[in-house]
Image 1: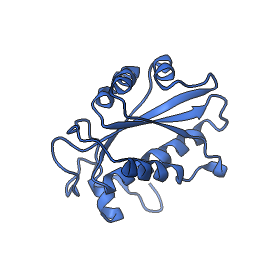
Image 2: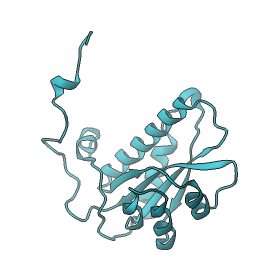
Image 3: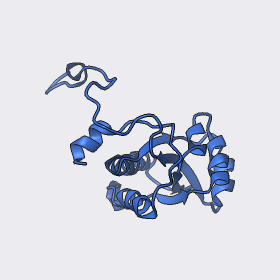
Length: 169
């Protein structure tokens, strides 16, 4: 897939077909996250790759909207240091990591969806995190159950001219 095709094909996928994802594809997605830019090259995120079903089911209970994690082929937990400085910069950096991973997944025909964490203790226990680390987000991965990833011609988005302002509001 070309970059533009990956961008226009990527959508949140919450229903997966059950096929496993190869270790090579998972490493490719993780490498995309590792290479994501960060403020001052701080590289604030670590990743925990989860593929065991019981662990995925446990992680899915860490947030009300994370049910898709239980059914994923794999989920990547984005981990940050509890004392991470930068606040909003770290959140921006995590957004870049997330989108880089999701685009890399789309390029491979793998669906993805993000989830927040509502109960940090569940995530901490499921992932075996040390006291100074916390889970910021989850990215579920799997092959779409309903339809493959293909470019979406008419996305459910605000009109281009309603969103884009040139020079001034």
